[in-house]
Image (cartoon, rainbow, N blue to C red):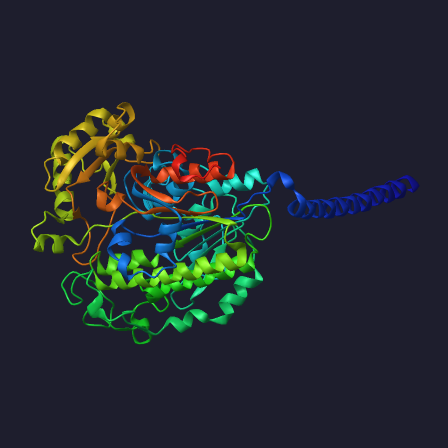
Length: 565
């Protein structure tokens, strides 16, 4: 009995010692981390903060077309004081939001980072998946499933990840966007936080348990202020609409508009229209969505103390309302022009905050876009430019007929999406068919369909090394495990979309040509018309910071952009 008691007492004593030691050790580690954050000279940098700005669906010519309407402190300041890459392009297809944001920050293409679209057909689980969707995490800031998001489907690191690794996780990373994917993918796998806007009847900034279990106090305070509600007001042109000569007529047949308003014309009474347009979601499709992002980004700079010490932080900001408005009203609309004029002022406000809070000379910034957009095809047709629309049901029926007539089965095709055809390989094997032969037969069939310009097999993508043209772009967007068995390309300016508003996704210049401006510490002043690619951004920032390149990066540092004196 005595032995048992002594043994119990000894175990209890050792447990107490262990707890005390652990507590002391954890406190010591926390204190050491704080000391390192304050005094670590190994990570000291002139650049206290890197700011990445992505403008969703910004064609390059929006920079030049609306130039005379811009003020001096936004786009014009970035271009005049920074370095303007005038011939910057995406080097893959499809040109969508998810792949775009991933490529900017990873320095590589979907072939390597794996984000092949916004949504894609998963061949293993035989379901369509979302690029940022993650059922293994929970929503924070809302009870809606809108918070069940993470970067787990992105296979490679971002330069923000590499900065975290380089600084022993001391440099912060914060991602912010109206869209979840616009915040999550740029911030990478190791981000301190990514925040996105949840509309509907809430109008709040949210996140997921991937990052935290509770919103920080500054975010809670921001949400409680209900400042977003102040944007339920009239949207009219900032200047006299008669001066908006860089865009088409306000009343035309090429625009969508909002439920509850007969014409897509100014002004828009958002307070009156919100109930018929999903409440706070209507703000996403107005310039005020960009204002909401700017408000929150400015609050984050203070709330997260970004750029307040000698260890570099990263702030990834994506303005998404430009995309919603482009999809609704089109490339040539007065609404797009007004949106960019107003966005210019938001950029000026953000730059002033960075000057005041971080210090002019203490931060580096780049601005680009995740893709461009096509002019509304019916508008192009009206001025005799070749364009059109895909009749998806007609093409699907023709393909089904071909498969039945050739193979006596319509079940060999599992999915058609993102201009790719996915085959059921098990059924092909069961029927003792050769996969390469089936792929090639489908290519030879669909190349005869109206508006299909080119078609290729997965086997071709895997075995032929393309170095130019649309074939190279297709190959850069082709991920062997995730992409389909057959890829096809539509005619120029031919889309699968409604006959109002614009869309994107092709490898043509209207989708691939986007702005790229570098600005701030370590950046030369000037411009170039030499071709640059979006995948060059992350290696350039990595070289500037002296950190490791993202682990899958295929782009190259733009040496002429960097001031190496």
